Image 1 (cartoon, rainbow, N blue to C red):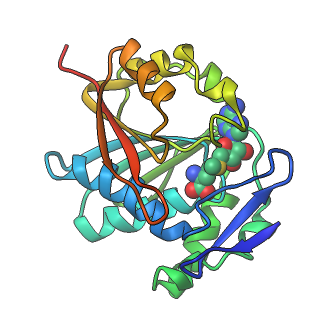
Image 2: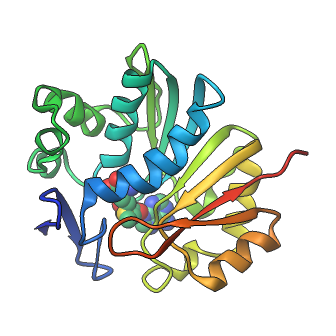
Length: 221
Ligand SMILES: C[S@@+](CC[C@H](N)C(=O)[O-])C[C@H]1O[C@@H](n2cnc3c(N)ncnc32)[C@H](O)[C@@H]1O
């Protein structure tokens, strides 16, 4: 079910889990703060190609904002989004993200993220190569393939099976040395799990409505 968040951008309510896909305080504001600013821009400051893994792809908002940011910074991005319950392109067409982000002329590009085939790489622009896979987060394993993980699963209370030591061990191994994982979650138990699998954990200011978020580092090997 479509809902409006505090900054005027849409989110979805997951009827299965009883939670929304984004913060009630603002979907685009949260994505910009947690994933683009604390994740992508942080890495883009030191390298001009960034490989991003997103769990899960959901509305495509993070992917769309990453594409726009790659163009603004003339950065190249390889992007892989994992999902098991995709929304339909028809549903995606009801979201107001292109207008809310000030790029109404890019509405077709946003829809392309939903229309392209699964399990194949798509060069959507010179700056952005995109793939989405129908793979559960728990089964994903790709050693040292990514610079940034956007860990954007539903919260631990809704999906505890996605916030386990096994999953974060795989996330750790999926990152290259000095890679980072960013997420809106800042729960103590979660941060302890990150440390157990080898991450160094940084607490940073959260988006509106949240005191903190987490950025975790893979150390140099
Ligand atoms: C918080 S929402 C993601 C929001 C998304 N990043 C966006 O920009 O709209 C969580 C997503 O994870 C997906 N999901 C749930 N269980 C999953 C699993 N086991 N593997 C992969 N994705 C999963 C859900 O279908 C949902 O789309």
